[in-house]
Structures are given as structure tokens and as C-alpha cells.
Length: 521
Image (cartoon, rainbow, N blue to C red):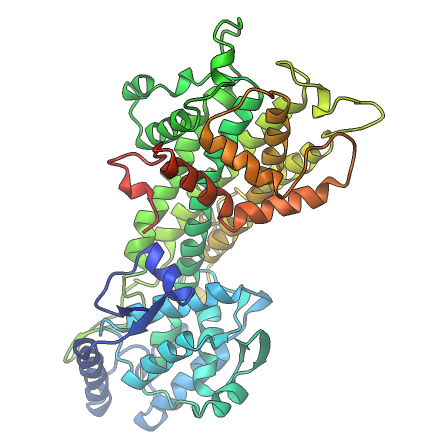
């Protein structure tokens, strides 16, 4: 197992997910330990000299003018965690909570937060041991950082709150006592360093990016299968067309679709069919899928800045050198998350249109994709589900970042609502996986009506994988079982993996040189 050095190595979306999944091991170097100790010494010096610094020896938010005595500065930090742990709703998935710990560790390890080394070591140890705090989903406005969720995330450090452990939710104190880890006594500034920050927003962005990458890849493949089932043309994916409107996302998708359809007996069986041009949902896949890739890329670039940034407050720059600023404000990610949410929703919007085309009874396909329509409703109703999910996604596209409700008695008079943006992106992707599963169900059925003609080796490999999960439908059955099976196939990454392996085997690379930024690393 490889090691990742917090504070020294750069977090990427890929490394953050690898740490979350236990494929990387997180450590601290001697150099980083020295930086952390040095930063803590600056805080101790501030307290010893009775220098007034926000959050170290003052109250918080609108109480920033209230001076706290030296003997109460430690209690101040414990009170902060307890009073700010006001989250409500269902817990976020434990992998996202673990990613929050990882991103916070990366920020604290840089030596600008004034925490104790043992506090950071405890966070890293808990993440490595999969002792993951229970964090309610709602309660952050994304401005002074994600105060409520981060408070819940770090209650276990002082023996409070609950944790996910070995498949159960249990009191944190019980688990830590059983592991010989007594509660920590927080020092001045530590509570504020722990709960100021954008780690809730950023962790949702990391998981959203990772999942959206998978559905972007799947959407191209499933779209190509739909095109084959509908006997569409691959000419709109000619690289020459996209060289004269050179949006990188469009060019990448066009290349992928071209590769996916080469060579194909189906595609080459109708050169003189008389169809002048295909509907937009087929021939405009590079433009629409490509725009969604551009939204994904923008969020990726900003998220990889954020997960390597220091986002608490105040920042300890040196001896008696502190700045009380606004690095905790979530606006930089909030807007990009809303943009990516629209990008993800549009993938579902166009996929539903391809579903509708497939059941219309055009282009030589039977109406509702079944031979005995009438006695059988065939594939009529799965498209209703797709339409319902597409509509729900549209309601989730209202930008949370367009709203701001002042908090903290007006001290925090502009907030980002980025935590809502991050949750909405992941909810839209939840729905999108089912929409794509329905399109995959339709596309595979449509391709079967083109037999004995075969598609490309890559698409035939994907078709065969689906058929190992879901059989051809010659009569009505409970299609929700099929939809759920295909959603799992897509969400697990197995579907995209099958396509990539087939492409590699047959020397038909689906990635294009010069487009590395669009990859997960």
C-alpha cells in the first residue's frame, strides 16, 4: 500500500477517493510535524501575551468583541464544538464523511491553523481505522465554512457524538475507549480550526466529480448503442466537423463516439437509406455531452484547488502575525457545483429523448420495442420513470448559490449555500444513473432487432455484459428489476470498465491524446 503525505503531497480527486477507499495510506512527514508544532507555538505565544486575536481569546461571530480569559480559552473550544453541532436530517454517507476528514487533514497539515500535532494525528488515525463520525446532512449555509457538519465530524475527538464503525452506528466514546484512545483536551484556537472550513462542500464535490465522470463515460457508450439501435449516422462525429468549432469537450465526445462505432455492420448497412439527418438527441451528442464535460472540468479544476487549500480562520502566518479573513466562504465551489448540476441533469434530459425515439416505432423498430404490442405494453412505461426523474432533476437545478440568508446576527451577512449545491449534485447523479439504466435497457433491446447485423466490438461487448444481467423481452414482465440491475451495473463502474477493456483489446482507444484534463487522476 502506498503512502500519501498530508500537507506535502497534492490531493487530486483520484487520490482523495483512494484514501477514502483505503487504497492509499495517509501519513505525516517530519517536516510537516515541525510546521504544525511551530504553528501551535505561535498560538501559545498569543495567549501568553494576552494579545487579542479572534477565536483564540474572543467569542465567535457576533461575540467577537467579547474577551475570554486565558484560563477559559480551552473550554471555549469545547463549547464551540458542542454549541455548533446542530445538524439535522439523515446522516451523509460515511464515505463522504471520511473524505471530509481527509480534506481537513490536508488543510491542517500545512501549518497555518495553530492546532496540536496530536489532534491531527487523531483525525488521521480515525480515518485510517474507518472510525467515521456520523454527520447530519443539513445545517450548513456554507459561509463560515460548514460549521454544523464539521462540528459533528469532530465531536468524537472530545468523546462526544456517534461514529460509523464495523457496519454499526455507535457512541464515539465507547469505540475510542475500547481502542485505548481517551478524549482530547482541545487547546486555544483548535475548535475554530476544526469547524471553520469548506470540507463538507468539498467532499460532496469530490464524490460528485468521481460519480459524474463515470456517468459521462457511460452516457457516450449508451448513446452510441441507442444510435445503433435506431440506425443513426456516425458522420456527425467526424473530427473535421469539430475542428471548426473546437470546444475540447465536444471534440473528446465526438472522438469517443466515432471510435465506439468503428467498425460496425449496423452503421455500414444503410449508407443510402434516405434519411437526411438524425434528430438532435443523436447527432448533437458531442455538443450536449461535451457541454456537460466542460461543466465537470470546471468543477474539477476548482475542487482540486480547494482540497489543497487552508480554509479555516484566523490564519496563523507567523509570530504575532495573524489574519482574520474569509477563506472559509464556500462561494468558489458553490457556483461551480450548481453549474455541474445542470450539466449532469442535461445528460438525463437528452437520454430520455433517445429513449422516446426508440419506442416510437420508427426506423424499422417495432412500436414500444416489442412485437406483440397491445396484449403487451412493452417498453412504454419505463420511459415514464425516465421522464419523472428528468423532471425532478430540473427542479434540483435551481442554483442554491443564487440565495443568501444572513446569519450570526448579521456578521455573516452573505452566505454561499454551497452545502446544498453539493448535495443536489449528488442527488441529480442518483437519478441520472437510473435514467441511463432505462436508456441502456432500450438500446440493448433495439440492437437485438438489428440481428444478424453486429455493431462494433466494443458495443457488442457492452451488449453482452447487459445480456448477462437482463434478458431480451419478448413479453411483459416487471421491468423495475431490470432497471435496478442495470443501475447497479452503471453505478459500480463495471459497464464503463467493460467498454474500456474491449477498446484496449481491439486497439480502439476511447480517450484522445491531449485531453488528459478530462480524466480522473
